[in-house]
Structure formats: structure tokens, C-alpha cells
Amino acid sequence: MNEWVRGKVVAKRRWKDGLYSMQVDAPIADFTAGQFVKVALDIGGDRVGRPYSLVNPPQERPLEIYFNEIPEGPLTPRLSELEPGDPVWLSAAASGLFTLEGVAPGRELWLLATGTALGVYLSILRTPDPWRAFERVILVHGVRAADDLTYGETIQLLADAHGERFTFVPLVSREVHGEALAGRVTDLLVSGELERRVGVPIAPERSHVMLCGNSAMIKDARAILEGRGLVRRRGQTPGHYTTEHYH
Ligand SMILES: Cc1cc2nc3c(=O)[nH]c(=O)nc-3n(C[C@H](O)[C@H](O)[C@H](O)COP(=O)(O)OP(=O)(O)OC[C@H]3O[C@@H](n4cnc5c(N)ncnc54)[C@H](O)[C@@H]3O)c2cc1C
Image (cartoon, rainbow, N blue to C red):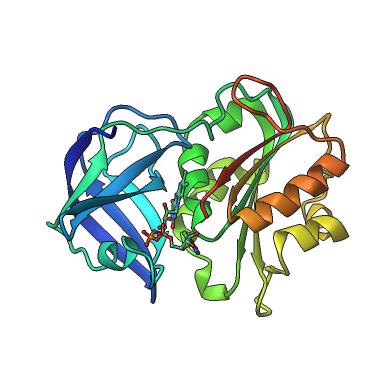
């Protein structure tokens, strides 16, 4: 049973048709970077809630979520119509285990996202934890079209703050775009092109990999990583990769 708190939209950013970030003021409990809240609206007499990763780091407010509108979905078409000042419900506490808690330190931390899953890593990357536990952090954002590459200012601030310890690799699958690698995360893992771009291999003795986004990518990437000897981390059981499925 969810306990809900009242929130208020304080800002909304429309990146392109159907792609939004929304900032919300709400008195939720402290959270760990990587966790999600439920966001809900009362629709036709029912409270319709869905989980969303928090994009803001735990020490910063307002809360922020990043989402795309699913035209046939019950919640997102209404969520995308909200304006500053509008009320919204949030779960009183965040949940989820897609965090760095319990992850063994290593040489490289790979953060692989498809689409709106980028947001969860922007929370994690704006805490000290990844920079304490890893020598290098590689953020990989896989999208279909170049205008799905969002949060450029935030990524630039991370690059300015962390220099050579931070590498951002955009992947665009349906068009050719500047410095972005062309193709899907899984194809670029199989071909080795992603690791060639970054200059280091993914291997159990040095890497931890976080995978977030669509289930097809995660399923295929898991098979590739396990083929290279990486083991999935589950709860307190140690491992080399961690997953979070959005859909
Ligand atoms: C732990 C967790 C965290 C999540 N965090 C986020 C987040 O930060 N940002 C975000 O955009 N979504 C996130 N999601 C998905 C989100 O909860 C909703 O499912 C999504 O926003 C659609 O809501 P809806 O009610 O409009 O449609 P739903 O009834 O939830 O879904 C309708 C259909 O769309 C598919 N779908 C859901 N999300 C997407 C998507 N992003 N792209 C394409 N198809 C999709 C579903 O599989 C389903 O077939 C998360 C899901 C989980 C389980």
C-alpha cells in the first residue's frame, strides 16, 4: 500500500514533442541516488501511479523526473499536460536497489542507458560515490534520433568537474550524428566498437556495469556480459553488473 504526499509542479521542460523533464516540490523522505518514486494523478476516480527514477541528486531539490509520453498509456499523456502550480501525488518514500550501495570498487564504472534511463545516472553522477569507488566513469546514452540526446548542460558540467575520469558516449541508432557512435548498445558491445571508443575493455576483474532502460536491451546486454564472465549483482549478492527495467 503506497503512502502518498502532495506535490506541486514547479517547472517543466519540453525537450521535443513527447519528451519532458518535470520538477516537483514534495516532502518525500531522504533517498539514495538511483532510487525511484511513484508519481500519480487521480484519473476518473482512480489514483494512477507509475515509478520514475529521480534525476536530481539526493542533496538537491526540487525533485526531478524525466519521461516520455506514451500516447496509449494512462498516465504520461496527462503528466505531460501539467504546468507549474499543478498538484501531483508522489509516494512518500523512494524505493529501489539500483544504487551503488554494496557495489565493490573497481577501475571503471559503465553506466548504460536507453532513452529516459539517462536520468537515473545524472543523480548518481552528482554524488561523490562513483568518484570515490572508481577511477573512471563511462556514461553511454543510447537513443534513436539525435534530438533525443538531452541534458547536454548537465553532462558538460560533469565533464568539467571530472576531466579525464569521465567519458560520455552518445549512441544514435537511426541516423548519423556528429561524434555519436551509430547503432544500438548491444551491437556496439558485440562488435567491440564501444570499448574501442573508450579505450578500455569490459571485464569482470576491472568493471562494474549498470544497465537501465528497455528490457530488450537489458536482456541482450546481459547475455553478452555473461558471455564475458560478468555475474549479475542481486541485492546483497555481489556481482559485476546491475539492472533496472523501465518497460
Ligand atoms: C523502476 C522503474 C522506473 C521507471 N522510471 C522511469 C523514468 O525515469 N522515466 C520514464 O520515462 N519511464 C520510467 N519508467 C516507466 C514508467 O513507470 C511508465 O511505465 C511510463 O512512463 C509509461 O506510463 P503510462 O502510464 O503512460 O503507460 P504504461 O501503462 O505504464 O505503459 C504503456 C506501454 O508503454 C510501455 N512503456 C513504458 N515506458 C516506456 C518508455 N519509456 N518508452 C517506451 N515504451 C514504454 C509499457 O511497457 C507499456 O507497454 C520506470 C519504470 C520502472 C519499473
